[in-house]
Length: 465
Image (tube, rainbow, N blue to C red; front, top):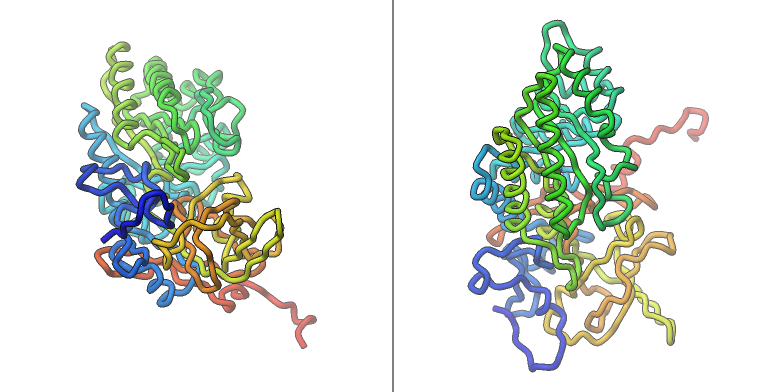
């Protein structure tokens, strides 16, 4: 049950809990701050997936990534079902696994009918080992190595060709009589209001062919028997709340389909990328998954009708909006420092090595104290990481209850680009991760040890004593 309190007093957890299922029949996970199963039980402790967060920390240690399986599955289902509802042709949702690529996450996404978008040989290998069918894996990247391309060809996955160098390399390594399934990534020249580093659709981007080279690219590919070009791809960025850029993109891409036909290319797939944003803080207001899909489907169908083109197989590759809200990170609070008239620092046992987004993108997060969910929000503090770096600040001006050493701080929305970008800075072992469902927690990533940190080290004989 959720605790109730006198009006007029702010409390630690109540304002962040998901909307109840009886008031919103099918909540869109990207519009929530906490996972869909988040509750406050009668002992005033935060519970996710039926598991008490403080007990999880006791069992698995901290920092700890806690992945809620129901939230992840719900997001997968909403994308999948919305395309089936609003698109009259065939569709395929791909999980953009760079957000968090590991065996368990890939397996869950695949079990919901999703394919996997990978951007390296390592991500490709992981997806294959997770049991994902090769015909539902698409390999991206602006500088794929020869070895990565060979692995992709041998595995039978689709290669999303990004540039001339890659096209020539594919032709060079193709075996006689071999047909390599490819898509072409093009830069649409569409701006969107998001962080400079995560805009990929504007012309000044390292990704994709320049649209001015379109005719030359189509002509070249049409003459290569080794290249079976099945589609075109574009992606305009990440953490986007606007609908118009994606609608503009869809219209541009249909024109590409029309132009490809002039060169005898039978383009049957169109991949509009991903980029739908999530709610990291209260003021964030992203469209729901269904609203985003509906807008894309409507403009694609209208544009194809206007050009008298058959509907292509429509692909999209959401990442953040599938996985981010499904995960939280639990930390243990340690030291604190009060600087009168300036700020109070509260330190945790992790930081920039398990979540580099604040120091990299100035990203903002919200947090609660898992063992004080009903306590009044009585102090504003800065959550500091433990790394030897002044910029290792996880959250500035966090409104929290009075904290003490040993309290469990839970940071929301950490499923995307946290573990996947984690490092061993200061030689900190990377955290463990668990997936929770129906009151059961299962380890999906084991916590690294000090032995793991030096496993790849080599000491020259002359330095040994």
